[in-house]
Every structure is written in structure tokens, then in C-alpha cells.
Image (cartoon, rainbow, N blue to C red; front, side, top):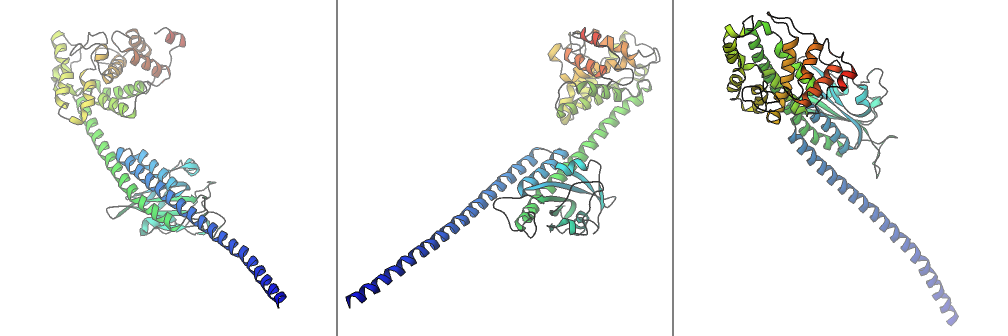
Length: 429
């Protein structure tokens, strides 16, 4: 009887011992599964936070600039970073031609598409279809889509694409594309050998497209307004030249020479823009000079010269009412000042003269010397060059003359420039 009990107990112990490892293995498996799930959730949360932070950074950037090129390039950079894709592209609508034109693209495709690509707004291309219908598309096998447009001669291969419309005030103004989803960790499900865009990627691009559309439209309005402003300024400058046929083209040439010089002075884009505006308006005060003096076909006498010397102040009085031109006023008012303080209208000296006026002074003087007047023939460019460099540090600012020398020596100052020897240049300091 006792032996039988011992055998039964042994069997029970054996079964229990066999069961315990099995349960432990199962528990470990469950724990590992939970750890992987937690890791996925944590990774997803980190990714969402990263996307949100970058979206906020992108919003701040868009609010800090109206430069169309910057806005469009940053929009595409944001698309690539947010969606982890190879590249992105932006089409805008040409309403007159009823076409899409390829405005901006990044990466390899951007290098290949240096020449503009235009697509009709119809169902013959993916972008054209999205622009026509206003319906976004998620395509994870682009090559098999009959609407896929491939630029002739391009080696770029598009596998996956998200394409959404850009809307502003209910109107489609363009199309934003994300191209070729990249592999990521942990991997996302895909029906193909390559990574696929997911529904959440599509929603993210739609969200981004609203900001991009507003930014693109605002930068366009800014560009149009700026263009209109420049056209108005140019028309005003041209009206001065209409009064004085002998100086026809003078303003445009001074703008050209001023920009040539300014490009060798390490100025910011904003400063270059100021140089252009200042040069355009530098002689606007001549509108207040009597025709008998302005149009005189002989050298001015002493009294007439005193009247002519009032044109910088006249120009200042006319344009000072335009607050947006505050940075340009110095160039207009003081471009006849001299570095040694012997100029007019206020006898400013050295650094007291605004940098813009220093540049225009050289450009204006150079053009005055090379231009033919009724009472004298224009000087050869090389002779005018020698005069400018001779008065470096007396009549003209040294750094401006140095920039003028570089522009002239490299042939940037038009016909007749670029013939100065290195030996002569080395002796100008």
C-alpha cells in the first residue's frame, strides 16, 4: 500500500516539474511581447513629439520670412523630415495657361529638373489629376500607375508617392508631393519590397499642406507688391530722364554700376536691395530743377551750379514722406559727399557718409565721366578708371574703390572694362 502511494506522488511531482518550465517560458514570451509593444508605443510617441516640434519650428520659420525661394525650399525640407521620404517637390498653378509648373524640388530630382516642367491640369498625370479634382492620392507603386509622368532622360525612379493639393481660400493653387518613403525602425507594413507610405503619413502631409499653401500665397503677394513698388520707382526715375534727354539712361547705368560694385563688398541680400533702390532714386530731386538749367547744353555757371547742387535735398524732401524708404534716403541725399569732407550738401566726412551714398558716388561719377554730353565727349573707361582710383581715400571711400577695381578688372563694368594689368592694381593701395 505504501509503495503504491510513493509511486503516485512521484508521478505528480514529475508532472508539476514538467508544467512549471512551460508556464515560465510562456510568461517570458508574454513579457517580451509586452516589452516590444511598449517599445513601439514609446518610439511612436517620440516620433509624434519630434514631428510636432518640427512642425512648430517650420511655422515659426514661415512667419519670419516672405522670401518665396526660402519658403518653398523649407516647405520641401519639412516634408522630407516629417515623412521620412527621399525627396519632395512643389507644383504651382499657372492660371492663364491652365498648367502646373514645377517650381521647386529637392535632392537628386531637383538637380535633374533644372529646366522647367509643365503639366496640363487633367488626368494624364498624378499631379495634374490632384490639381484638377482637389483629391489627394497615396500611391505605393507609382511605376504601375498609368498617370505617372516621368521626365524624359531622368534617371530618378519614383516608387511611392503622396500627392496633396495646396488650397488657399477654397481654391487649389498648387500640388505638394512626397516621394519615396524611406525604411524606418521599427519597420512599417508594406505590400511591396520597398517601404510604403501609411495613412498617418497622408494625414501629416495634408496638415502640412495648409501651412505651405498660406506661406506660398503670402510670399507671392509680397513678391507682386514688391514688383509693383519697383515698377513705380523705375517709372519715377524714368520721368526725370524724360526731362533731360542728354542724360537718358543715366539712372539705369548708375544702378548697374552700383550693383557691380556692391557685389564685391560682402553685403547681405537686403543691403543689395537697398543699393538698387538708392541708385534708382539718387537723382529724383532733379525733378525740381528748372529746365533751363537741367537741359543746358553747355557747362553750368557758378549760380546755376549752386541751384543744381540743391537736387539731393530736393530729392530727400520729396521721398522722405515714404517711410518704407527710410534706409534709402541716405544714398539719395549724400551721394555727392566726399570722403575728405569737401562734398555737398552737408560736408560729411569719412564714415559719416552712409555706405549706400559711398557706393552711388563712385558709380555716378564713373558714368558721368564715360558718358558723352553735348559739350564734351565721354572719356574712355580706362581713363575714368584711373581717375576713380587716383582719388581713392580723398573723394571716394577706399573700400568702395577697392570693390570698383575688382569689378572693373574682371570686366563687370561693361564694355571697355577688364583691361587693367595686375601691376597697376597692385600699386593702387
